[in-house]
Image: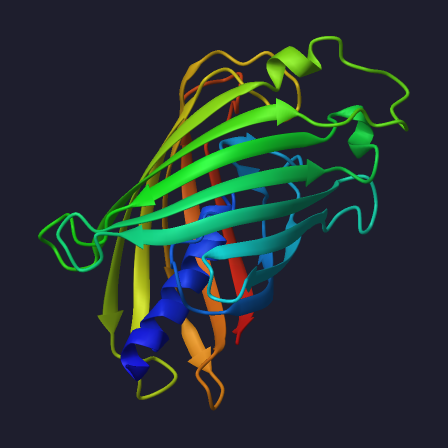
Length: 278
């Protein structure tokens, strides 16, 4: 049982990092009950978009599972390191429900249904306004014959949020250009290696994803629909504490950008997260 909880904590921590960065898609339906943490990244890349203009970012997060009901809430704050507490800032609030269908079967399906509100408290140099999103995430841990290899699929539909009263100018096309869908296919491979800093084994995770953008931009720009980008990455976990619930996760990622209206550059970035689960 200890090993099961240990793996659940690790996989959830990894998913919270690699996945936010595709929308805070947590994969574990049960453990842990709550998590707080922070992540530093050399760039903030979100579904292909370079949101902070090649600048580093700090992400602060909190996630709470509500009474083992499957319902949960999370909040994530994003702040540019080059403009500390300045214009480049965003807060994401999420209400979600997650559970498992056909547990223990080859077609066992972890699923998550969520609503996200993207709140911009500052002017963000006039680039955007608040946004909303509904998403569904499916993952199949037992589907493939290779242990640790897991496919996942995410569907997200984005809509404009409230008008920001502080905006001096408005983009007349923002509502249209910020409305639409994303399809994200993901493949993760998790495996154990001997511990580098402790006698316990640790998890290494390889992550890959392909993003289809239906013509939606969080910046309200005109986006050409199609496959916008593919990402590959690797991360590992260092677990500390008497309860084995403090996780440090370094990670590296590389993005192949296909659609210039989303991103004209291929991107490489790295990050490290510190999370406390309880």
